[in-house]
Length: 178
Image (tube, rainbow, N blue to C red; front, side, top):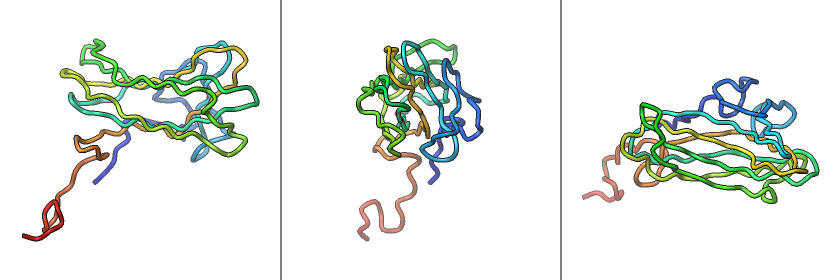
């Protein structure tokens, strides 16, 4: 069984924001959840985001993962994680996920801790060909920047498992021989 991350450059290990659509975001080489780089979303009264389109099939549910940490002593800015479903003509079909992460839940990176987020979307509606993943700040004065790292989007099977389901083996699905 292979698990495929639909996000390209989700760990920012290219040292760039390539494959991402961004605003008020920079690459950070001082802190990372894993590897050497993370994305730094600007805090304060600025709207910042990273976003990316990924291919999907109708009926698929997605598991969205992202690690977050605050930079500096000011309270962390609120973060939203969203998924929107589109058809092949870029028509918005529906919203599959909207999660708000309060700033007081995001740990300070100086403490060597990160908040790991795992969220499952609703099923992609008929006609879906792509999902648009957005991780953004909610502008608020006197808040710190937030680091984002290890972004992943995985397809969830109907049984809730990540990735493809393999063969059950010679003893059957229950593990009992007949």
